[in-house]
Image (cartoon, rainbow, N blue to C red; front, top):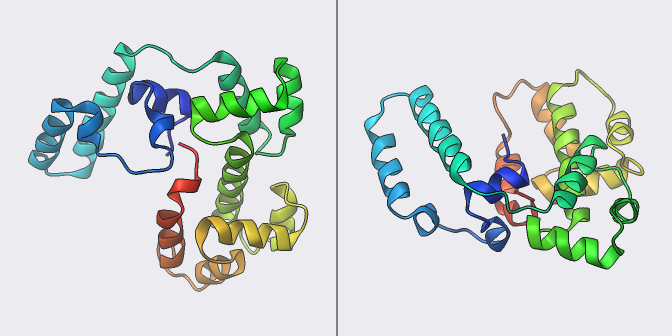
Length: 197
């Protein structure tokens, strides 16, 4: 499950936007805590125990951190999420009382990406969820439900984020392939730099 931006900001001591488009070693952020975590994870025998340890560490890190995200940006993110990425950024800026340009600058400074890019990622996540769980739902219906202008727009966006078309994903799922098709995994790995935290 992805972290919401304000959790990532607190977890990584306000540095989240600086590595939105790159890979950073956890040790560079957390120093000795990261090294200790690695050792402790290696000593545990099961995934449930490992995830529990990481959860405890994340909770402790967030508890001692200070909020660094502007409340306007938290509100904007919540609005983008609540509308499934289908909201005009100009309207959000107007409601906050900022110019479009200032809103985009502040959002990028605090989140590490533009509000439009965040909305695209949220729409994709919604579409992917529908594709994963829907039983024989038409792609045009999924496109409409997720706010894409038409099926070809949906196909372009899905391919941009995943590396395959929604049709390819749907066909792989229909054939009963377990898990996520490799092209989805590879596509998401290659495109992590385009996604918001």
